[in-house]
Length: 167
Image 1: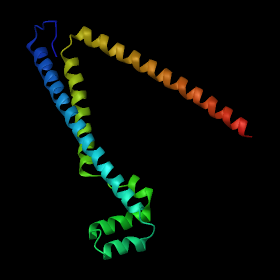
Image 2: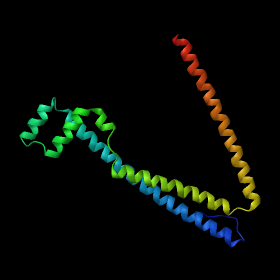
Image 3: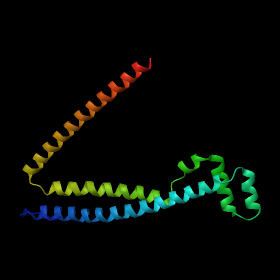
Image 4: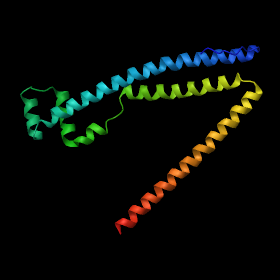
């Protein structure tokens, strides 16, 4: 993160260095998040393949026969029975995997680092610049609140209009 403005204060320079360090970590963590997401996608594809394989059987007896004839392993037998009994729910409501939990933790850390980065960059500003930034942020918040209220009002009118058409 290069800055054109020179800072005379060593304290401000220190804040900017910390903000740059956070930016470096954010970039690396985003790469890790992408890697974890690819792993999660592969795990989901494997679950889908297991689901498809289990659904090829027409009954629990067929699964038992396949296990009895040693066409599937014991682990596959229990997994297929579970999938066969629970159906699509088994695919959608699986317990979180290690990769999914790691991604969730990484995203929380990433969010905290981005927050720290903004804070360090803010601390490096002069008091006048900080005041101007606070005013800009407050104005932006007010605009978003007004926009959200407008959208909710429009949504309320649409829902009310649908209810009147239904009766």
